[in-house]
Amino acid sequence: MRRAERRGSTKVCSRATVTVLGSLLFCCLVAYAQKPTAPASSVSKPAASAQPTLQIQRQVSGDLLYRFLVPHGAPTAPVPLPTPTDANQVVAVTLPANLPKNAILEVINRTTGKVAHLPVKTNGVTALTDADFTLVQTVMVPVQVEGKGGLTDAVVTLTSSDGKYKASWLLKAADKGVAQFTNVPMGVALTVTVKNDDDPPISQTQTLPTNPPAEGYHWPTITVTWPDAHSVPLPAAPAAPSAPTTPPPGVTPTPPAPPASNPLSDLISTLIGLAVIGGIGYGVVWAYKQGHLRRFFEGIGMHIPEAQSQPDVQPFKKPEQPPLPPITEGTADPFAGPAGMVGSPIGVGGGPRLVGTIGVYAGQMFELQGAQVDIGRDPSNTVVLSQDSNVSRRHASIQAQGGQFVIVDNGSSNGTFVNGVRIPPQTPHPLRPGDEVQVGMTRFRFEI
Image 1: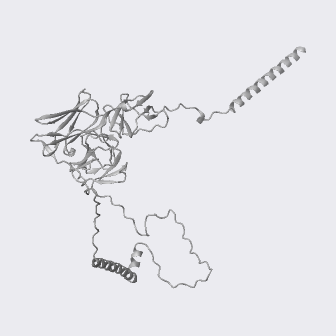
Image 2 (image 1 turned 45 degrees about the vertical axis):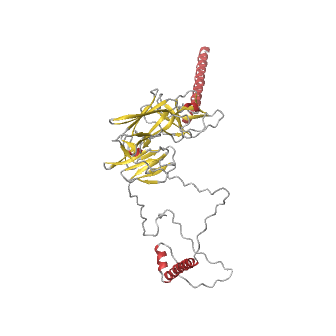
Image 3 (image 1 turned 135 degrees about the horizontal axis):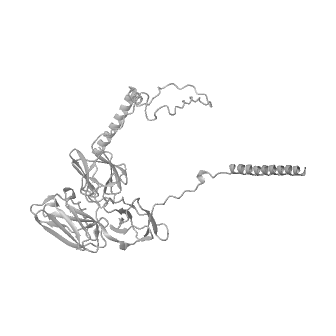
């Protein structure tokens, strides 16, 4: 009997143990199911890599522009170099995407007309000092035919004595006998050579000064005597102002006497003026009486009420206000005019033209007339952009060739861009309506 009791108690303990373990397992499952999960937005993500920058310690004053030169590729558009705001004079310049390692940073000082070329590096700080500006932005070489005008259809070559610089310029009629070269080194002997078919070449050698004019260095004029040389007329020089006459010492200059007045002519002029004013007034009154003025104003949408007798007005009585017209917002075109009339569209016809979109000439339009239109800062150009200092004296030309228009960069200092891409110099590039043309810091839209 005791064995039976022990067996019964053992079964009871086993059942109690299973019950307790089951309860603990159930509580663990409930606690796990109620555990809050982290929202998706709280999951940390790796930060995007920042665009690399070039640290420049600006130790130069003046109006500075910078751009990146890419070997065998078009340079980036020039933009102003930021002004430093801290005591260290350090500014950060963001590098363009996919910029090659052998790219060059070009800094242009528009105040002095000098250029600096520096390597591009992302580690450390690049110092920019006056000693880095070793290039002249623009060198202009005038070549003339003796007794005729500017030379054309000839090649002008500029070479440095160390062999590091060599550039050639083909003179065309639009150049007016002036060849242009950019980023020319200072402190080294330079030789200009002019060649024309079988004629003997002519050369000149000199070293550029360290303080050239801001608008560019003018090489001394080279004169050729070739009998078969082609030439173009030179632009007319501006007339010099006449010198004022100085009276002898001790003599007070007598001011010019005013013109004598004629009383008879003054009277006649006064009578004529009064007659004209009286005639205008009489015409207005006659047109009003005949109803012409009323029909004219009603034709342009203005209503003139008929003259009515004034009703008796009681003192201190507030006149009744007419009911407000209902609001019809969104039910009619606010620019449509009277009912039944349709607005006429603005005509856009005419010849080819350049419409300024960005820069000092934004909103201005230049008509392009003739077979060739020259663009530049020089007053002799067809399109004169004298207010944009980044435009060369003879920057580019737009020509009509074979029923279409092309643009040619005349070897300008800052280049010519079509739809954001710099075109090669001395090479015709087709223009289509709607193309964007950038000359210096000004952008135009080409329209026909």
